[in-house]
Structure formats: C-alpha cells, structure tokens
Amino acid sequence: MKTPFLTPYSEKSEKSFWKTGVANIDLGKAPFQSIHNLLISKDNNSISSVGSCFAQHVGKWMIENNYPFNRSKLDSRQISSFAFGNVYTPRCFLQWLTLDPAHSHRFDIFYDKNAERYIDLLRPNVYPDGFSSEEALRKARISAKNELFDTLTATNVLIFTLGLTEAWKDIDEVFYPSCPGVIAGEFNDEIFTFHQFNYNEIKSDLLLIKDIIQGINPQIKVILTVSPVPLTATASDKHILVASQYSKSVLRAVAGYLADNDEVFEYFPSFEIITVNNVNDFRFNENRRTVSNQAVEYVMSHFKSAFSDNEITQAQNNSEKNHQETVCDEERLDALNKLSHHSNDNTVSRLTLLGDSHMGKLAKALKEMEIPFIGGMVMNGSGFAQGQFSICETEYFVPLENAASRLLFAPILKNLQAHEQSSFEEKSVIISNIGLQTHQTVDRFFSWLQKQKDADIKDITLKNYVDFFHEDQSKQLSILLTMKERGHTVIVVSDPPFSRYFKESQSMAWLVYCYFDALEYICSQLNILFFNAAKAFDEEIDTPMAYASDICYPDGQHDWVHGNSMYYTWLANKLVPIVSENT
Image (cartoon, rainbow, N blue to C red; front, top):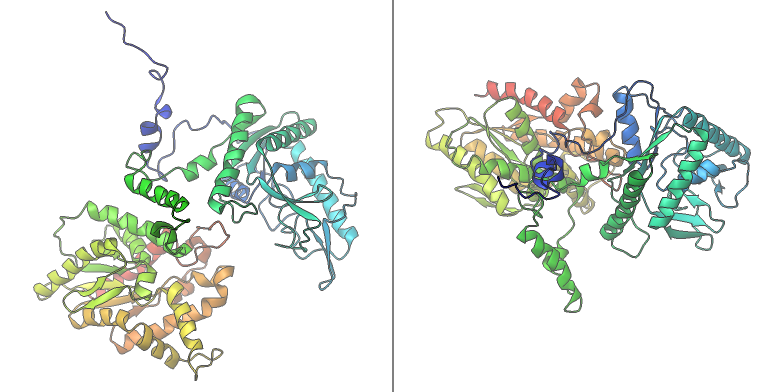
C-alpha cells in the first residue's frame, strides 16, 4: 500500500491554520483555542501588574473576578500594583527598581510658583496636586519604592504590559513617563530630548529587570503582553499610524523573543486578540486574510501620492470622521449584513424603527426580546443633522449620505407604504430619533445662537430653540410630521443621558438636556409623542455608569453619545408598553 506523502504541516492542529484558527472564530463570542500556553492557578498565587494604561484594565478585571491581585495601597487614583502610575517603557520600570529616592536629580521635581506646590514629574498622574515641600515628595517616593519591593517579594506572577518605544529624557539621562509640560512641569528643549528605544535597548532593559526582580524574589515569573492601544501622538517625524505600528512591532518582537528563549518570560497575546481583522472589514475578503480589491485600491491611492507632485487622491482626502461616526459606521455595516439576509422578507410589521445608530442598537435589543419590527439605522447622526437627504412627497425623504443609507431605508419605506395601502388595517407605530443627534445638533444650535443679535448665551430661552428648529431642523421635523399626518403613530425618543457622566462632555450636558426639553415641546405642538429617555433613566437608574458605553478612544475621549447593550435593553423595555398602548 502506498504511504501518503507527508509535509511538516500534515499533522498540525487546527490552531496552525488561518481558516480554522482565525476565520472560523466568531470574534467577541467564541474564544481562540490554544492561543497561549499560560496556566495560572488562583490558589497559592499572587499577581501584580505594571505597564501602560492597558495594564489598568488587567488589574480591574482581576479584582472583579476575584483573582489574587496586588493593588497599591498608596495609589488610590488608579488600579495599579505600584504607586508610580502608568509605566510605558521598560526603562521607566527599571529606573524605579534602581532609583535612590533620597538622591537629588536636577530636573525631575518641578516647583509650581503659582500653586506653591512641588510636582513629581516621575509620576505626575499619581499626585497631580503635588506636595507642600520637596521633603514630603521624597518621603512619598521612598514609600513607593518600599511598597514596590514588598509587593515584588510577595508576587508569583508579574504581568508587564509594554506600551511605547517613544520616551523623553533629561540631560542627566533621567526618563519621564510623559513629556514634561504636557501633564505637569515646563518643557525646555535645552534640558529635555526625545528618545526612541530600539529593539536591543528594550531587550536589554527587560533582561536587567529580570535580574533585579529575581534577586528580590527568585520564584517570580513575568508575563509580557503588548498594549493594543495605539499611540495618541508621536514625537517622531513619522505619520502617527506608521509610528504606532513601528512601536508595537518592536515591543512585540522583543516580547516574542524573550518568551521563546528565557524561561522566566511568557507571552500573552492581548495585542493580537484586539487587533485581528474582523468580519465586514472592507480590507479583507470573507476569510479575513485575503486582501480585497477595494483594499488594494485604497492602499495604492496612497502610493499614487508619490507621483504627480505628491497629489493627494480623494481616498486620502476624505474628511476625518469623529469618534461617534466611527461607532455609527460599525452599526451601519451590521445593519447592512442583516439586511442582505432578509432582502426577500414581505412581512408587514406594526413597528418601524427609523434613525441613526441609536435605532440600530435599539433594533438589536428588540431582536433579543423577540419583538418583531422593521428598520433601524438609516444614516449617521451627521446625515440627519446636516440635512443629507432630499424631501420627497411620495417617499417622505431620500437619504443622500451614501448608497448604503438608501438600501437601509428601502424596507422601511416598503413597510410604511404597505400600511397606507391597506388603509391601516393594523396600527403602524414609528419609533424615531430624527431631530435629536445631539452630538451634532447641540453644536449647530450653539453656533446658530452666537449669530443671533438678540440672543443671550447665558440665558437661553425656549423661543431660541423654537427659532433654531424652524431655521435649521425644519426639514428633519417635516419628515416626522408627514408620517404622522399620513396616519402613522410617531414616537420620538431622546438621546441617552450619558453626556452628564463623562468629564469631557459635562460642560455641554445642560445644553443637551435643554435641547431634549425643547424638542419635547415642539413635538407636543405637532401632536407627536415624545419619550424623554434621559429624564426617565435619571429618575429610575441608580447606577448609570453600568449602562454607559465602555468605548474609550486612543486620545482618552469616551463614547458619551451611546449607551451599552444594557441601556438599549432598558430603553426597549420602556418603549414596548408605549407601542402596545398605541396599537
């Protein structure tokens, strides 16, 4: 009998092949099998974490899941094992391990003359208010150093999240967690210089760290991981995308080498799990590996700029979308994918959803509750707020944001027309948030208000809002009014309340809430139902942040526009009785 020809791949397991190891994984729901070799027991283990901002997520998860995590008793502001804040480079960690707190450096303590406080530039996030004296600052450093060694002595597993290769140092070779002058202190280019760590420097620093901590605790093991969070900014001359990928690649290469060649180090692939391409990513075909023709065109449109006097093509020159629109694009792609699976559905539903990404997320909640409906997201919030549509007598309106928006509106229009053609044999209810889009419209209102000669920004009146709706949002409201006049019951839903719970949006929260109240008044005049979800939520929910979006962008901004799935489930449960009352 002839023996089958074997290759080195013949007896490899499923994890070794892209199709079975990656493409077939339902990302976010099913875990990757055999993606690491770690084995850590909850018993007889003591875990510490150090590194970039992503390390705080590690600590938070361990505490919430009852793992034996060592949390600093000195730093109450962050979830960290040590009281020196985020450590973005191995050199900064090495510096703390070798630091003599009593030794005086020339530039790492900044005296704020205005506040009459001493600021520790080695950890500006831990004590942002500073100290009353230099002596108090140094005593705090000594306490941090003592806690560091005590914690390492009691640590079995140290998780080190590598974050950056970029750093700033002074002329005495003291390295800083951030550029002096950005968070605290003052920048002086005669003192502080930019430093880009290379592969050999990173590897050498980690090996020195290993030698020191094993001298403290010979039993300690180090798990290296690379933060998937891109750089917020770069001090190099590279584009931020190129600089970020370079930084992560160097760190990943060092971590991989040490994990493969030194028994003290192991590797956990948080970087890979977060950054792997997902389904519906235009850059790849369905196998999530083959680069699509569209992606090739997109890449080469950038290469084209090397010719014709660096002419920038349209693909490069598209205006940058804000954070919220990025979230909305993901929602739209999901809606399109579902639409393709139900394109021949002729069922007439009594409930129709029409709006932006909030309606898309509400649609998911209703589907989970097995409540029938048609529609969801049609356009981004900017599409509605900026009037990217044409009013049409026979079709209410024609979405002009892109071809996808027209595809998404088609089944909605079909459902509404079916009700009208049957003379509303069954009641038709429309839930919409057209006219809201407060992350867009509040800015538009404020800009409009500044141009009004008789308006007082410090004393905004209901008339101001009514005039704004009349001048800027009349087309949007006319869509809702026409639907109501043709026999549909229209329920307008306010945006979520989370603007008041995030620091970066709190200053505009009062305008957002006033906008809700004003639109509720407008709807009452048009005999359109209005559900002030923000008001109802605030009155009912005692733990609002449990319902907030957990999305945090690379620049530190939060997604205060949306809620998480719990919020939209709560919203669905509030709206379903209202729909029942009107059908």
